[in-house]
Length: 441
Image 1 (cartoon, one colour):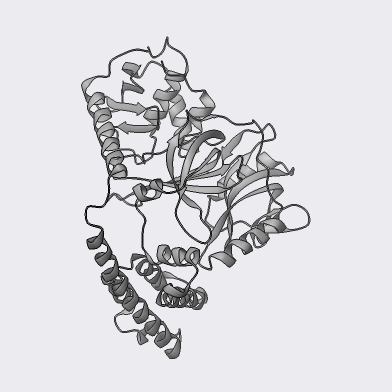
Image 2 (image 1 turned 90 degrees about the horizontal axis):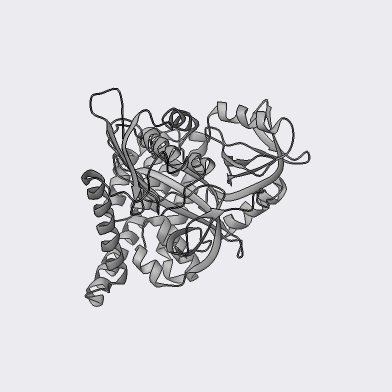
């Protein structure tokens, strides 16, 4: 029998405040039928505006969600409402039931996918020599593309940034050349040049030139820095390969998460970023999960919980991104208090140290303690009375910052977010009683 979650646990998974509010209206039995819980899953039919109820199923271990509604939020209000209903006790949703066919089919598909991923992780390369030859051919193509990019950037600077017609074909054509060279990381950065304010372009030119030049000398670099350069250029490491190497076991505190759905109605990947910090090691970690159109990302961890697990970090001079390996139990309640943090002055020094290892790093996960949000002539800032940090413009809605100011009421709070050259992007705030809340919710 599954341990029923608390209301706070369920609401911590909400992608925003609107979803949490809508879920509250669906937490009563009235709109639900055919509910049940068993085999590590929860399911039910929710009456909507149409004649056909929405089919909602939740796999509780990951957790993962599936709903037939058209919402682009994950979890949707129906999944959250069903979880809230279930959290109320067995009189609302009975235990020990058998999932109906539509729910069983989805659960079976997920288990088969997990089995394929496990088999792939346990497999070996069939032809190491052929894999080496492919890697060498790609490396040569990327090196040629990096050299071409350096020449294009130098030519652009020589003509002057104001001369928009000096780059034949524009930056889209250069980005396409980087794709042909199998350097998607370079291509993505080049595409951004056309929409970047002119005041920022020269800085980006310099960083791109540095990155392309570093790849041209990849064999001379220390291995951690070389790994960083390869990742920035667009080389990836398979999850199976990472998990086969060294892992870090710890009790990881979930500092926060943010889910970004694609814009527009033409679909695209939904991206979820989950930030962790080791209780023993103090190491920060970033987990990325992706969902295809109409599907939620596979991974969701409630903020403030502790998860004992093994993480495998992507190689680099300043390892941060990781993949989740073996888990030792479900996420547990945290200490019930805000995590230890830094002053604004210490946060600047921390980002500077990280930037020295990785010059292309745009931000670094940071917990600020004892800061007050204030609105000044140049925008919002976070201050401890001696030093302050600007809030990154556009990182959260303006209304969320006013709510944060109301929670603070002029008193210091603890905030988690990402700090970089553009400012601090808040993700999670802790109330005086130690409860975490998503800033954008």
